Image (cartoon, rainbow, N blue to C red; front, top):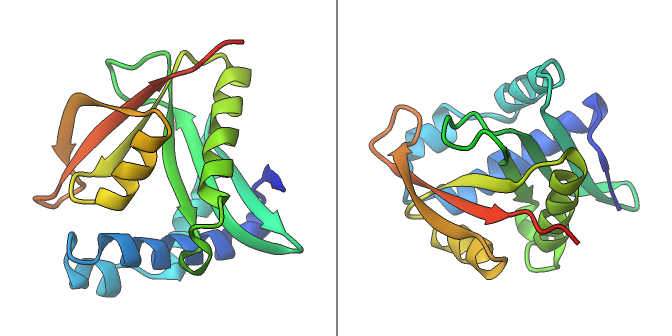
Length: 167
């Protein structure tokens, strides 16, 4: 079941995010960044601040009281995407990947975009993160021309977009 994220869900979402990032970003970002600079406690603090950000919405995928994945969306901050919703984060517990949870969350993201009246969904992914890029491409996301440096690193992240289908 997918439901709105609550503050009580934040520690688990932070845990999924930190361990998920370590899995997929290992070899792309430095170990120092992934292990010394990143912690579940720091990420939980960041996620708690999301509740004060108007327009940012979080959702969790939960079965039998266990949160297995989450997503966070917001209005796109990209100047060239004023009518787009940004899929800011989508992560599945690394030990539960391959069970269709990511696909369910991505489908839910599309429903939220429709309900909110967005014309497009965009997301940013590290250029070297082949598994995630393949996942998004498999679900109809297309690479556009936007590229940027990821935070304060030399790592490039690229933008994917998908039109919101109206039925």
